[in-house]
Amino acid sequence: MNIYRAAFAAGFGRAVRQPGDLAVRAGFYLLLLLTFAALWNAATAAQGGDIEGYTFAALVWYVVAAEGAVNATKPRLIEEIGDAIGSGLIAVEMLRPVSVVGFRLAAETGEALARVLAVVVPGAVVVLLAEGPPPSSAGALLAVPSLVLAFGCNLAGQHVFAASAFWVNDAKATWFLYQKFVFLLGGMLLPLEFLPGGLEFWARTLPFWTMAYAPARLLSGRAEPMLLLGQVVWLVALVAAALAVFGAGERRLQVAGG
Image 1 (cartoon, rainbow, N blue to C red):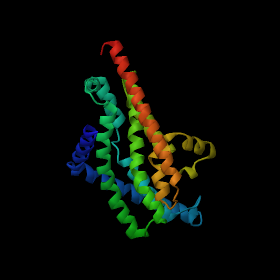
Image 2 (cartoon, rainbow, N blue to C red):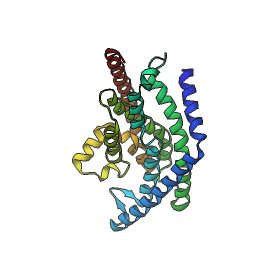
Image 3 (cartoon, rainbow, N blue to C red):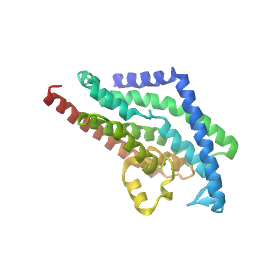
Image 4 (cartoon, rainbow, N blue to C red):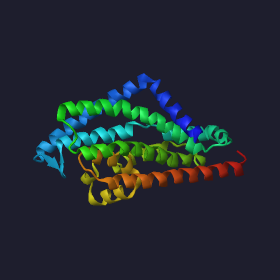
């Protein structure tokens, strides 16, 4: 466990030592926040004050968490992992007496924590000053651990998808597909309640809702602890899946003589 704690600390420190990257992320995040605020202001006004039970203030707080959770992770992490597999770097890492997936997840989680603090804190301050506190203090408290679980699920899910590079040469298409799943089925662009019935069913069935919708739903005023339980269950499942597919990839390399 000391190794994984060290990896987490190293990842956090690495992100903190890149203030330029954090500043760009924070600036882009605030731009997205202002853009969505303008869109939801117009939409709620046209609908008489709320949409599917979400007021304008609730939707702005929703955006704070949804965009923050997704912005915490590297945008092209799947592609980076795919390149590491293709170049043989992962094969070298597999020679170490630690789990490749565990070590990488610990480091990426450290980086993601630094990024989420850098974007969500200023975003929350801006919305607090402009619209007041979150609609539910209980929901806001639950949203804090939910944010951590959200990018944890996202990182584990990206490792699952990236493992396709053990069998295909390019992970770019996998990254593109995964990104669209998170944007739409994950609730990053819209609350799941806004989706058509069939699409909403699949969004709630697949794990992507854990990566943006869960903390956003909580911060928008819904104190629903079951969302946290669902995130924990999916996190365990996604980490297990990542370990399984990387294990299968390692066996493939051994058979192929890699």
